Length: 538
Image (cartoon, rainbow, N blue to C red; front, top):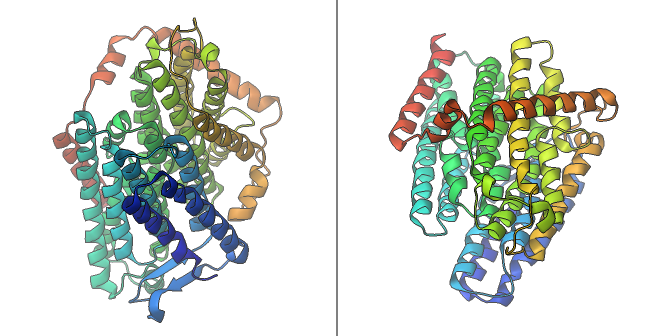
């Protein structure tokens, strides 16, 4: 039983290698067998250890944990691992054609399965150097999947993603070096214990800053988010769902782990990262409102929703506001995956990404339309859908802080406006010729849509079971949540009609604004200076 964490890393990796070597449509089905095996193993592991308040630790070769390679699991990592395996199930069902084999098909499955093993290793790693290795491997594999179409735009977006993320990971490595020089170990739990009662000094704060830069790049926080829209614009829809639903969340997971490791140092990080989250949310929704490309709209809303998550996660883990941000991580993974997968089906059918050129989807693909509407209701915070629960927890957590509350309010208005704009694709005449989607694509969307409803209605036992947090004070029932949502939609509709639909000059200027790689590097320097100023100078 204790070896299950190791199996969960190596099963997808070895499966990927076998698929790459044999290149057979029958061998490709091994990916589904591996997914089933990992699902069963994770459930067994959770049943054995998930209800224990203490984390489980696995050290390779019976070495001292301070110098050996170790894996660490607690409720947080286990919940992310469940999300990882579920997301990979959906992407596999949606993207891969198991009925035929060719080099492109086999290579895609190889990289997809290999990435899953690496990501599961990243979630469990308890020493900082192996965390760095898994981050680098994730960056390389995601780069390949972004550029998989082998077009000029795909290569450019892949290289842009690679360079920006490698820069962030190098900052992370510098932070590791500082910590190793200070403590003589890179074991996360050991460093946390050694920090107890240790006097505050500049080197530790610099280590914290460098580690946070790496996490911020991975999470696509402002102003380090510029790689995300470029990647989503060219990646396959299944990969976009994986990027938005899970890979970006790796940066937020890293943010939680770093702050947990530095918790004895009592750094006052809440206000800084709340502001960063608020700016990220505002900038993301502003760019989303100006876009005409369906995938770009969804991509910038990933930036915006990450900002909302950070607004919650910036609080202390003892605060319900933190769990609102954490719950929104899982909720967003579901409804944004659903929206990207649905967008992929629609784009494939209509052969265009431009929202204004897509009409009559409700008549053409009623099932896909209903599933897309579920995703839209979820992301805009409709009662009885999962987005409502996490946004409401965050709203309650900042209700007595007016400036924080209004940031969330305006972001929610912008989100509603943006999806009112996108909803026009459902209306209009039925096109004469379209390419209908395959059944597996709809199956994965149906499963995710049901999950959005389940997390929106059965959130109390889920939050209690995984995190031991009582969310019974949040209720999606009653007239007040409904009135609040209707008011949000009404204001959003008015803003759409008066500003967005008319495509006024400021909206066009925002849409045409581009960030070069050189500018992105300047923005990273500005972010570093802001961190140093806040955590060292002030």
